[in-house]
Image 1 (spheres, rainbow, N blue to C red):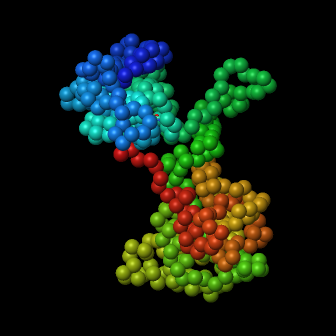
Image 2: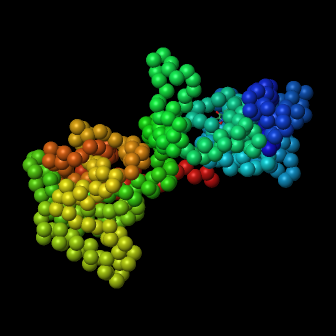
Length: 423
Ligand code: 4GY
């Protein structure tokens, strides 16, 4: 694997790659790193590599001709993959690093000053990458980051081939905590499980720790793990609660069924891959009506595509009945309330959608998300609620979403696809 860095400061690159695994890999010839300096492609007496920006403004821009010549020299024929390091690039991810590691030759182009001429980017850059949302004084440190991250995936660079194996096992998660001797340090013992010698138990503990850590520190990372998201969605159920609800005065009421709620929330539930959608009302005739409407639509000849969605619809006389139905080998479901009001269900743990997803991914039981009707869920009558989702806030003081809209937004927050896909 070969890296060629285009830089006017090669002395920033060379010394940084002499030690550690990358240094040894270079010595062993597993990877090669060269630099090409645009200054060597200047033709004037002063070896000028910068010029004033058209349109004025502060700072200088890299002069196109020497930079283009240097990139051409670095890339060869046919040109190797040319990457520009810039905060405007796509965020570098481990997934992209893995793809880059499969290429035989990467050219890393480092800008300096205020940046490069736009036409150089158009002519001679294949991809723009950023190592983070901050501004460096040049692309060199970004180039070093890419070399380091890519090189350690090149076969023969890391000592043990098992290190890569172990990482793929927890791919996309933060690392589990590591310990070495001494057994006790400043009164802190190494977790007993790691000294048990039971490899299956240790592997399970490490996986849980990695999930928990990712949940607490990087819920966004967890949310982009497709397999985890789909698995949790499948064991999540939605309940549309007509009782116990409250009216505008806070009085406990039973609300009437709304046709559209049956239909639309079933479609949302299906879209996000839920396990079921429960319409909860103590009024038998209303349950019959809900079941009848669902069946009507299922048998509707022009409604084949929505038939499957309506199959998710079930009816129940109470939240407790739904809980019973969802109780299995893994115990009762995790009951999650939703509310338009910050501070609702004060005894329950408040969770953002990502936090709830993370928490649910460390368990195996079902998840039951309650959607209120009327003016919301009658909190004091639903003691089974142990988590409450952060409210949806539009930024105005007027906050009255329909339950269909709120349900759809919550499902998108929980299970919507948002993985960063490399171009
Ligand atoms: N962030 N990720 C980054 C950077 C410096 C002006 C263009 C970054 O990758 N590179 O901050 N680079 C700028 C400086 C010219 C590059």
